[in-house]
Amino acid sequence: MKGLSWLGAIIVGGLAGWIAAGIMDTGTGLIANIVVGIVGGLVGNWLLGLAGINLRAGSWLSQGIAALVGALFLIWIVQGLA
Image (cartoon, rainbow, N blue to C red):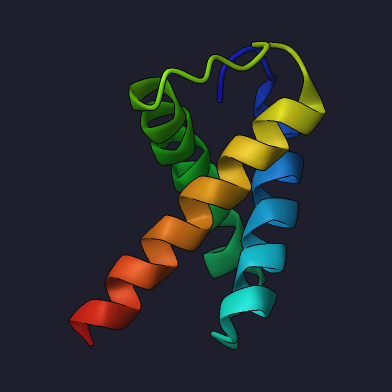
């Protein structure tokens, strides 16, 4: 995630993954939520960039929103494949 430290990326990714798992009712564990949230942050920044939405790089809130969007997208894709 842009502009966050490793610890910040883990915290924001974990929260975003946990919220996304709750919304999508996946029942995954802590580690899976953190991984989905961190990868979701990368995917979310990419997707929002394609849509022309540029987020502030160092903002925890903006990166949390990007991670949530990306995590929801990833979970939606994985659930569609299953």
